[in-house]
Image 1 (cartoon, rainbow, N blue to C red):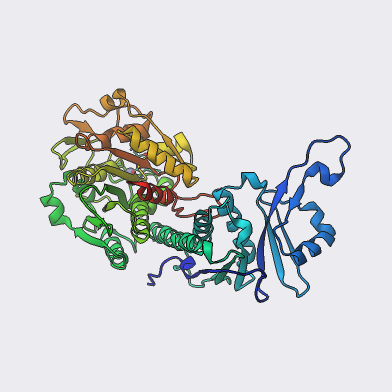
Image 2 (tube, rainbow, N blue to C red; image 1 turned 90 degrees about the vertical axis):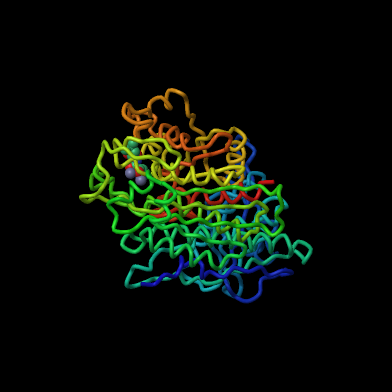
Length: 520
Ligand code: BES
Ligand code: ZN
Ligand code: ZN
């Protein structure tokens, strides 16, 4: 079995500076903007629909374009495209970015993704006229957005197909007229985009990997192997004996019926310049390599795709990996709780009572509400590290899809500042994050008659937040914590052209990386 990471990691991206005209004969991707027409009665067609803005093109291209009758219907609106050829037969692919003033980084991500898809089957190498793809004067941010999007778009999980059809496109050159003065910012942007894009694709690979390949033991090894390449990163893996020693009774209860021993992967990144004021962030991820539901067995249709129940762990690992590559200034710890939720004669039965690492007892009324059990012990373990903040990510509840769909990630927290910062980061990365409240009534609803807590609430309503209320029971006094329920966003992001319509999305990694880069 091959263990290579996502095929897009083979895509080569580079910048060519001082490139007034485009060298060679490779196709060029150009941008065009749209100028809205002023509403005038009896206006001519062009005046009514608005017109294309392409002042930034080389003169030759503008001239050819202006003579093409087919080009009249192209007005540079967002999502429109137009292909034409120069005197030498070079392909010029134009992508509309819409009104120039409204172009933001997400427009760049989406339109470059669409352009990639239009050319990737036919050409080996293409040039991007990157000066037409700059958001304001944000050279670094624009290059990051473009390159991370291209990496994400080129991703293709085909390693288990006997006949692979890799994209023809192998190389993309960002050609710029800019001199070396802006080189640093552009190069930094590209480098960051590559680190983020590659880390997202590695996380996607983990999520897409089937459960007969990726289990708690093999997954921990894969992470260990990948992390060995990172600078300033240390890895420690706890096995079943260590988890017993840690008294992680809830985590271990989920692992009871598994053919594979549970693993807790503990990664740390220490920044180059760290002192006693350096902030410490802990990421925690739910890593259920498969969720059958256990004795509270899932119906067949709901069980399909439950290999993705480790997406929380892949998300936090992807973010950790990218943050380490970017060299963020905070200390980052990443804790992955890995097991599957299987069923056999020694599987945990509903009504069982187990004791958590923090001493609280929990009545297991539904073995399918297992993610919160794994997280509970991992969160308590994380609190012992006395961090400045803990952020966990988990495909925790089906109810999250009911509440927020597949586009929006839910966040619950005990700290307004932390939520505010995460929301700012999500906004900066054009990912959707919405806060759900944990209220006292929900806290009441998870109290048990026979133990301290029960793992499902009395009523079915507000399932996402009641799971949040359960996790909160394992956060030690004074520790800032936020919980991301990624059940909806973790796969099938068909509205995003840089995500595959089926399979792992890698969504929320950018938000977490942005958050860690901002921590001071
Ligand atoms: N992994 C699931 C959550 C899930 C379900 C994510 C469907 C995405 C799609 C989790 O372990 C689970 O089964 N949760 C239960 C909780 C319930 C028993 C309180 C659920 O959501 O149904
Ligand atoms: Zn479950
Ligand atoms: Zn689960």
